Image (cartoon, rainbow, N blue to C red; front, top):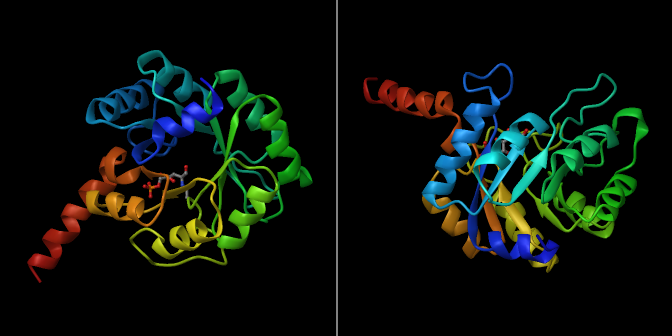
Length: 231
Ligand SMILES: CC(=O)N[C@H](C=O)[C@@H](O)[C@H](O)[C@H](O)COP(=O)(O)O
């Protein structure tokens, strides 16, 4: 797939994040592959997926474009989304259309450098999605060569931590105002109407994860509503 073709395919559309870590009930590549099929049947235009096993299984069942990442924890860093060249090589080997990596300014494991990692991915002809938590991080990542940015980490870095339960609309708006490059809205998008609202605010595409693919979280919401009703 041509680089620009992938971005055109997801423009104005929904991308579904199909992820379940080892401690989650739906963990397993076959389950994530079924989630991806369900997402495609529902009309998703792309899939965001974690780890080469899940990605390989998903590629067998759908031709939708895939944004790949590898979540891995390192002792010397808070960065866990595609933190080093090792994870990038795993994704290149699995074959993805776009690689999502942490593009915060936090220290990376082995002191690896964001600029070098972005440009390494680009040299392999794969698109780079910068997962950021602030406007400054987004602009800097684009300067460093990222093809697009996603608001994935807003609320998840020590300096953006919040109790917010909805998407960071302000961050999407501000990034869209300051750059003409694609801005993807991601993180705590819980309602269908938020997807259309974020697209109207200028988002290129919207990623939804937990609200579609983490049934334990969906159940919790129903249970909370039940508790409120009976107070
Ligand atoms: C912060 C972090 O590690 N986010 C991860 C990034 O890949 C995923 O766990 C999220 O599910 C994804 O970003 C979609 O967000 P939400 O599940 O809120 O729709």
